[in-house]
Image: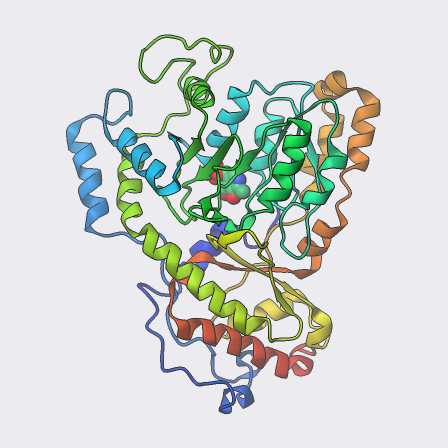
Amino acid sequence: MKNKLTRRNFIRTSSMVGVGMAIGLPYIACGTNLQTKKAAILGGPKAFTGDWSKWPLIGQIEQDELLTVLNSGGWCRLGNKTAPKFENEFQKYTGAKKALAVSSGTSALYTMLGALCIGPGDEVIIPPYTFIATYNVIVLNYALPVFVDVDIESFQIDADEIESAISNNTKVIMPVHIGGSPFDVDRVLKVSEKHNIPVIEDACQAHMAEWKGKCVGNWGLGGAFSFQESKNLSSGEGGAVITNDDTFYQNCYGFHHQGQGADVASLVPGSGIRGSNLRITEFQAAILLAQMTRLTEQVKRRWENAQYLTEMLIQIPGIKPAKLYDGVTKSAYHLYMFRYDKRMFSEMSRSQFMNALDAEGIPCSSGYTSMTREKYITDLAQNKYYLNIYGEKRIKEWVESLSCPQNDRLCDEEALWFSQNMLLGTKTDMEQIAEAIKKIATYSSEISRI
Ligand SMILES: Cc1ncc(COP(=O)(O)O)c(C=O)c1O
């Protein structure tokens, strides 16, 4: 993807602005003279005066856990204890019956599709507003990714559009809890139950997010999490599958471990069809165990700060925080996603707005480019295997179905993100973000002429 600032780089950039938690100066309340201060891009003072939290955060506990594994000489999960210990903890945190740690979020999704034996001729439904991995794991199996446009208000898959994308070949519905906020679980499950098609939740950005009080990843047949460096729970690379279905767990275990079972080193019936090595290392598991000691506090802090920020941002004309559906009891806020309407900012382009925010000390990303228009994806229509498997007629229909106007609007014009580490700061930081946007609105006609 051609993002100027990818999500991963964005988190790296925004977390390198300073070290440690934001200190924050005393808040200058709305109605005082900050509103009249010039926008920083026009020579005024910066609105943000603290330091953004760096990411990832580490302490003595990471060093201790890592050294224990290093010195033990047991570095692979087979026959060792750290990965199972992490899986146990992750089960407790998510409330799932089973957790399987794997080498990445991509591996978690790939494992579940492998355990379901998804292959050539099968179709899998996904939203276009996601990281490319959601698409890649389908195409790696020579299955057809079928896109369902987004609900622009929430940035999530439009659950009302899923049914019309279902064909006789649809084998999985794989929506994404994008930004760490749950998609409309109830409406997705209703379609899934009506058509008897399993849901695999891409929860790679949604650690500890909840729908109606239960963690995401538990609602479908299985859920995938990523522990890549930028994620809210991180081990550099890593991932996990969670499920409440014992047979599915066994099949996932087999697929990720060359077709062999968790308890015995022999091929598992039913999952021996295909397999790979997608195992996590003991080092990754050690870091995850250490990182988890901070998870609950961080989840709470992001959620509270994001809610406070939303209260302030909804009052600014032209700024629309991504809607949370009624069933959402917690968002992980991996990304704080909002929409920008340039008409309320003297037609200032989104990139001018981002530059103005950057001058205030507030990094911001325009997020994903429009996946369904990427050559990487449209070229699938010329892939000889795809033409053989699906035939020209289906592939022609598929190309037509790539039109996702709501997603294009988000990607081209409206979407903006703050990264999760910015939500680890203080309430003052949130107030300063809101004040910065208000300053930019006040001076928008001047800024748009720069
Ligand atoms: C929505 C989504 N799905 C899948 C992935 C893949 O995870 P990983 O990078 O750990 O392979 C990511 C990671 O960025 C993601 O954001």
